[in-house]
Length: 89
Image (cartoon, rainbow, N blue to C red; front, side, top):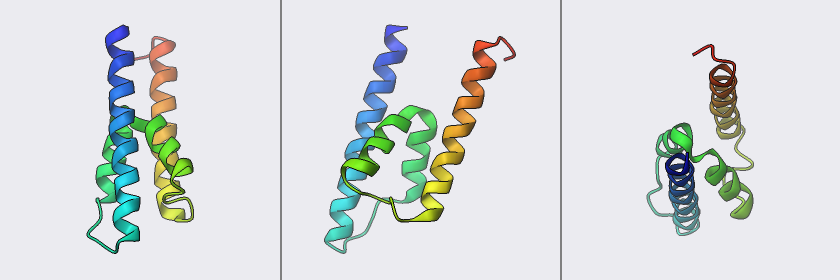
């Protein structure tokens, strides 16, 4: 269990830092980190990190398509956790 929590902490920190760096790149009009990279990191456990970065850096909070995709991934994760906890998977 400790390994799993450490994994979620590390992946959340990575996605938080990348989202912050992406915001920095956006302000400098430089080439950006692809959204799919951020979504992939969210999907493999970085939801908390990406959500925190969205509020902390005000990053992608006005982009509806990003928010919708973020919520869809989050809902899929919730469903998987529910199914796991109810011993259905």
